[in-house]
Image (cartoon, rainbow, N blue to C red):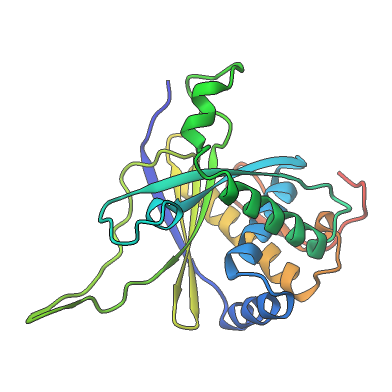
Length: 239
């Protein structure tokens, strides 16, 4: 049966790569989230070999429902589906991700939960259906201001996680940090550490070489033992 035990792996993004992400997003008139999510899809393709990929993205219900003053955890999970062939360049993948995110936001009332209630397909009781992975871009609250009260916001690792793999990239000024929560009954910390390092390698390659096919972006071969082995570009069609 499905479990919810969680572990967390954190990694800083190299400052030069963080600056490159911002410059690349500005040059292409897209958001940082668009770039990071496209890199996540490229990483998933490199890690799994699959091209039909779905990732859930977190969207604030207050904004989508035009109720900015509403206080509460009103998060919608919007599934974003991408066809990521290995010959697709990162630049083209970015455009596809941007369009799919706009479609998801336009139909934001059709959330992950809504789809699960209406779709009929075989399910594994031990796995998350449809979108087992999720992605988010968050802002560091920094120094929280209260009248007459000093407060500090701290990150607390999750003890439970609904998704098998949830990457949350946190922006704090010019710095970026990757925080990956994962189902610890399915994957070890060592394996997830290697996978996050692989994601960061793909991310760096994507923003520096956007016209490279995603199947040829630099990455790490990650074994079941969690050991990452650096790999360069590969030939299109190579396995």
